[in-house]
Amino acid sequence: MDQPRVDPDQELVKRTQSGDAGAFDELVIKYTPRLYGLVYNMTSNHEDTNDLLQDIFAKAYRAIRGFRGKSSFYTWIHSIAVNMTLNFLKKRGRRFQLSLDDVDASIQNDKEFLESTATSSPVREADLSELQRRLNEAMMKLSDEHRAVVTMFHIQGMPHAEISKILRVSEGTVRSRLFYANRQLQNYLDEFRKNPVS
Amino acid sequence: MDEFDDNEIARLLRLKRYEQPPPGYFENFLHEFHRRQRDEMLRQPLWRICLERAHSLMLRLDVRSLASYPAAVAAVLVCAAVVSLKIYQQPETARVALQSPPTLSVPASAEGEWSLTSPVATQIFRTQPVRRFNESAQTHRAAAPPRYVLDSVPVSYESTFRF
Image (cartoon, rainbow over all chains, first blue to last red):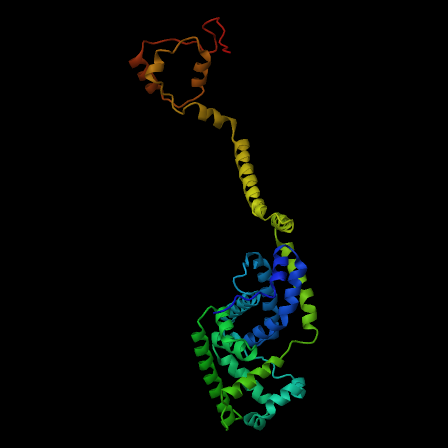
């Protein structure tokens, strides 16, 4: 049985609810990098991510008085972020053309990046930058909901249970979406391996 | 193994953690957030800003039980303002009309009490052209013998004032 855990942000949340705007600033500073990764990997666009992040924190600030602590602040702010991003993606529809930044040039010199790719035979064979670009394209081919799950699980490293709380779906649904998304990504990347120039 | 398995996909996706915004983005984000909040606040009407300030002041003072009072007080004030405005704007003639019924039908019981000692009442009836001549004549002829009233001339020297 799950033990009720103390929310590490409880104090900051209470101070914000009492009208301390500085406490909310601390929450913004704390969660901006993490939420940026989440929103960016769902939208694949820096400008959209910036606008959405501003809206997300503005909405959270307006709504925080109604936050009763039934979930952690972490889950709550991630729910707002995912829902607002999904709504945005629905509105944006298919007019978006993939302008996604390929992997930063600097990251190919990153030690952790090199270590993580050194043992991988398919990765070794393919040009990393090109492979990453293909991966981004493959991500954009997923549905918004599947991309959200992939982003939270693979990129953000969240457990299934946390994702299910954020999306308000069962863990089984999360696992099934992940399975389906992985198959789609594999198919797309395998196709690229067999026919790299396409 | 040449195919991408789940681990391979996961490893590749983890690389996306390295995709970062331009340098200095996170440092400037809070300033940008404050600027947008200010802009948004300036677009709000003054009363809403005052209400929010009052609400947060109460919360800061830890008067939680009174936290919902500003809304209630504001609602009462608005209602009072609307009611007083309506009363103030109501024309005088309308009030007279409400006090006296719009038709000139005199109840049968009042017919007997009709006396010449009340010229004021006679004058009020004369100001309301709501009855046709024929109708008036029929009513009076049917109910009582004809009476004659001289306008604006007191029929009695008794005082008409009642205290």
